[in-house]
Image (cartoon, rainbow, N blue to C red; front, side):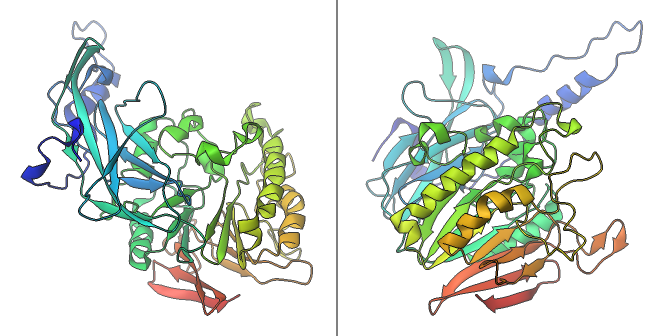
Length: 457
């Protein structure tokens, strides 16, 4: 299948790693922030508007990242270094014979951008393997719609993915609390690539405080690590952690991280953008968002927090998801959320429940979410809750009043806590798979390259 974006494809393709946009422009921008000595006639150079086109600077294109997977949908996002448009071609064969081309955006005007492009594939078959590639075309100049010029398309390598569904392989990995710490992040994504799960759950605190889109593009689409293409063949379901709500830009993170397909939501649930409830073989995977780690009335939020209604809305949504026949029929129901839903009353964590308006306190576990969602987890027979937030591995077995086990993943610390050696601090990859009809839970310590827990639930 030929498209206008497919020019010069027959000449062979070379994989091009992404380089942060415009070194000269970046240097100019930094220089422009410097103070000019008083009385000097020199003026700081003006940064060029990137929406006027690449202006002769070669376009660099990042590896595609698979996001928001479903049974019949798949999102693809990728980084670019300048003004560009993009499409995804996909096919049911690695030769890409008879490929279908999908543009970014929906109806009407096709979106273009200077840092990230996104395409959502729809109408796919459940539990089916597809091959795909991105085609990215720069605007070398864009004075206006009547005065724009296109450059040569950049065509990616061919990658593949398999959609979710009841017939898909029941195998997930969970990562969390990566906090843009790239040494541990490389360890984490290398292990995920090695395990090659059907889906990876990125369970919050990917960020710290995000003031610029450029920061989010680096974290989610183009991390400065060796295995930056880790999500080109492994789809990612993202759930926010408390840090993923912090910063003057972060409310627009859907420009970089695709939300779930809109067809999964009613209008009154539109703001539950990343919540998911999907079948993966014998598993049902449910993603919830615990939100921030302090009450809405906390003085640090300056009136910006509205998480308590958000959690209540998710309770209504969750009840409806458990009632769906394909979710109800799953043998192993697994819930993912960032902040733990349980703390032992005898532990030091228990008083820090996220409901006190205390300037010096924050949630070690979420009492509100536990009270809202816990009864439904019990009624539905949830087997496992997978969390992060605490930066330390922990396993809480089921109890007579709680049918589900809870596993808490580690953070980015590499054997150090508060500047002192601490062997209990290490990044983890939490792996779940079904063997012989049983749910197996394996927790990998990627710092010491060992398994710290391996059990059947």
